[in-house]
Every structure is written in C-alpha cells, then in structure tokens.
Length: 199
Figure (tube, rainbow, N blue to C red):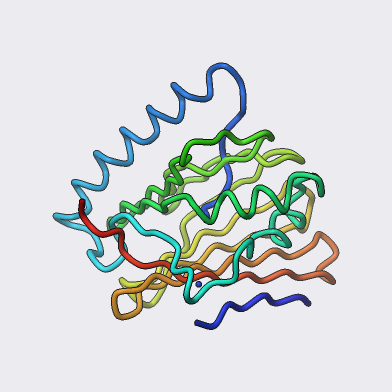
C-alpha cells in the first residue's frame, strides 16, 4: 500500500482522446459543465460546486505521478503530466443526483488517451477512457452533502479507482485511490484545493 499525503493538497481525472478533434470536444464539455455549474449554484451542494485551484502550500508538486502510473500512464509521461495537472483548475458542478467534473487544460494538451472531463449520475454508468482501456464509473451515495464519491471499475477485472472530494472550511480535499486487479497493490493520493478568486 502506497499513500501519498500532502499535509499542508482530479479527478478527475481521466477522459480526453487526443486527436485533432480534442479541442472542440473539450470546449463542448466545458460548455456543458458551465451550464451545470449555473444550475448547481441554485440547487446543488454549494460547498462543492465552483472552480478550484491547487493549494500549493498544502500539496506536494507532481503528487499525481504514482496515481497516473497505477492507472496505466507510460512512465515517460507520468512525471511531466503530474506537474502539468498542478497548473490546471478543477471545475465541479454538483447537484443531488449528478456531478460534472472538468479539468480545463491550461495551455497544454494531453499526449495520451486519458479522460479528465465527465458527468456522473446515480444509477447510471459513465464510460471513461484510460491508457489501458475503458472504465465503468458511477456516483456513489455518501452520508454528507459536502462529499462526492465516484467509483470506477476496470479496465482490468477487479481493478478499482475511487475519487472522493470533500469540502472542508473553504478548501476542497481530493482523494484518489487505485486498487490493483489482484487487490494487493494500492495507491492513495490526496491533494488540497482552494477556490479560484474572481478576476
């Protein structure tokens, strides 16, 4: 079991197929998330919905590297990708029965098939892409309106990824948990975000 905890902070995390079509797809996804975000401000968990940036005082730089490796990212890309993700924003639009997560690229493009933007609903599976194949993802029920939990099964039989987002006193803690197909290898990464200040 490997646990990387940044004391002192996604998900999302993974769904863009890099091709000449990736920019229109990403722009369309951001439009959908923006629409859901406006809805979430009215009827969703306000503590979770919004735009978040990495709290670099509370998170180790490049913290996602081990998680990316566990999910199948080539070793040559994992380190640089982890550092690039540090500069991206996390946009969450949460309602009672669905959540949209987006990680808008900050002037760069993903070099591998890795899905970072998706909408997850209770009782409905969402297919997301990873370098090793597709995962089946669903939104889990939690005991708090300030917590989002997404469970992703696959690509291999028995393989499992859990993404958990918790709003805590103006901060957002992201916990990414990967369990290997045999259940013997485990990687946990925690990062902390703060709300993006309005321009």
